[in-house]
Image (cartoon, rainbow, N blue to C red; front, side):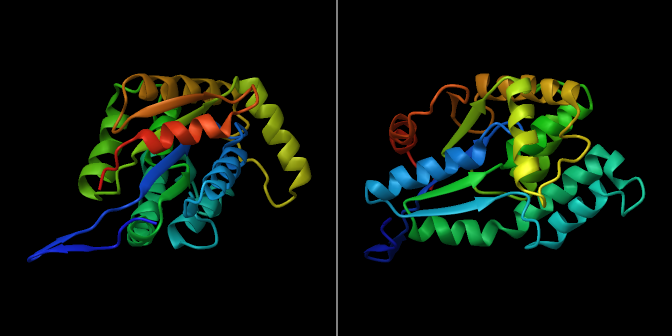
Length: 233
């Protein structure tokens, strides 16, 4: 467990845990990766907290996203920036909880984080990682909202057709998890994958590590990479 507080005269030093963000297409296997990493970290004696965005059922902004995707709010879902603001506000509402978890846990695993907003919005607008939308997300979520910086962002890379097959299988197995029209838009998913690759290659915001999601993932190796990163705190 991270050292909660150490005193040296009047100086109070707080050591925080590592924030690891898991990114990738819908159906890439992010939840499976989070499960595997959490189990491996626990096996090694590390304390782990988890979060996933959007926080449907837990935050009003995430619920507005879900409602918009069902066309409950007119043409809101057509606004790339409007939807991105809702996703961003969901994360902003979780900031205190994330920081609290980082103070008492060795690792906090997050299924989707700021990069997902950047990648999907840019893809919808047919822009790359060097475009205006990604810069706007940085200004909003990173500079203005001051969200906690991830120590490592892991891109779970799979071909779009593999991700689509997995998402379809999950949809059949989990009745409540129906894919929205953006998740079933193959060209959009391909563009999103390309933006993710660009974000990883340029180490957008913090270091990235790319994991092959088609082959069997070596959770131990990914944990080694995660623990090797110095903490942002």
